[in-house]
Amino acid sequence: MRRVLWIGAALAVALAALSLLLPYQPVYDPWGWLVWGRELASLELATGDGLSWKPLPVFVDAALTPLGAGAVEGWLLVARSGWLLVALLAGWLAARLAGPETGRWRFAAAGLAVGSVALTADSFTPAVRQFTGGLSEPLLVALVLGAVAAALERREALALWLGVAAALLRPECWPFLAVWVVWAAWRRPALRPHAVAALLVVPVAWFLPDLLASGNALAGSRTARGDGFELGEAAEVLGRALVAPLAAAWAGLVLLMLVRRRGERVPLVLALAAAAWIGLVALMAVAGYAGLPRFLAPATAVVAVLGGAGLARAGALGFGRQPGGRALAAAAVATLALAGGGLALRAAEVPGELGKVHRQAQLVEGMFAIADRVGADRLLSCGGRVRLANLLTPPTALAWRLERPIDSVRVNRWPSYGVALSTKPLRGRVLAREGRWRATQLPCGQ
Image 1: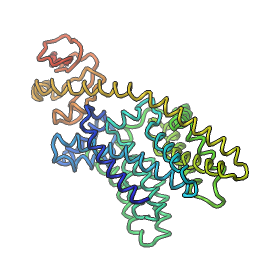
Image 2: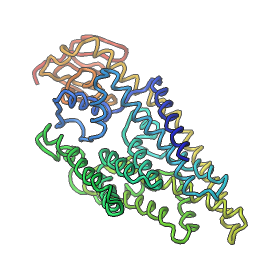
Image 3: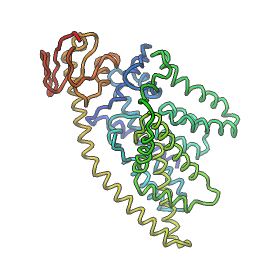
Image 4: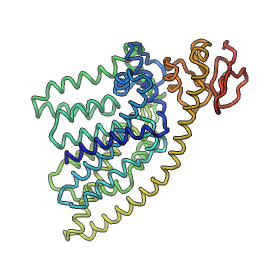
């Protein structure tokens, strides 16, 4: 099984590299991480504007900075490899939890898990957009599932450091990492230095850069949090968690709990951990943080894994002439049919999503073309800032292209001063045109 993982990982990286030939661009946050990575590499980090601090992507992008413009492809390679590794790990874990006694039903387990994680429902940022745009949540899920796989293989140190990497992507990981660190250090004294290092690395990486770069260690939290408390957000999060996996994954999870072996703890622990993650995201949403579907991704993936394992066990038992076998067989067949229907419906949406992704990438490429034509100095000639009048293009992308801080680009639907880039006519002197884009000189005074 380990050999399968290594071969699959190499294939995932190769496919991610091939995906760089596709005409797609990163989305808002990855462009911002690239800007911050470049600033960190030059010791000029400024985190007070744009997006909330997230250590791991910025550290990776800082290491990629010597590649120059190639840092964009470097990050996309890392992020897309993560997305593909999620499918690999989900399938492997589902087959492993199903058990060798389920025979060929393990293929059904892997299929359900892979299909559910690859086509997770997300009305805000569909799975296709997460893959093409280089978002970090797929990488987060790969690290979480990798930590689970390492723990099952009794490689506690590897599981711990995969957990640390995940904790450098999302704060929801912190309590789970803390529990694992304490448990591992208690069971394995040799891991205690690792545990101490982990408990130091995570807070330092999250809070020290913000403190040094903005003067406020909680600047990232302030940026990410909205105003006030919204009790209704908890219900919204729970609804998103319910529809994110395939319905068949939930059905398989129920089956797994019904046929779970006496004394078997792993499926129960994973199910409780998924529920705790969903509850934590819901509580954070009540406190004002975004409860987006992709923030639920680790829990969604665990549900998919457990659902696949439950399908395989129910099918193997049902068709193996066990007591109550007819009911289990019927449940397994119904779950398979539900999975097939759900996958077909979600797969049908992929071409439309790819079309949207392509159109957005064309907008970014057009913006880059006109920015290159006009030049950074002229674009920033009014107070060191340029106005971006198209709300569908990320200002962080323009900041990266101009090699300036994020706050050098201001988004304004109808700017009245400065130099503006837009895809619509503005009242001012047109400096240049490039496709749908135009650069317009407006008065410099506010």
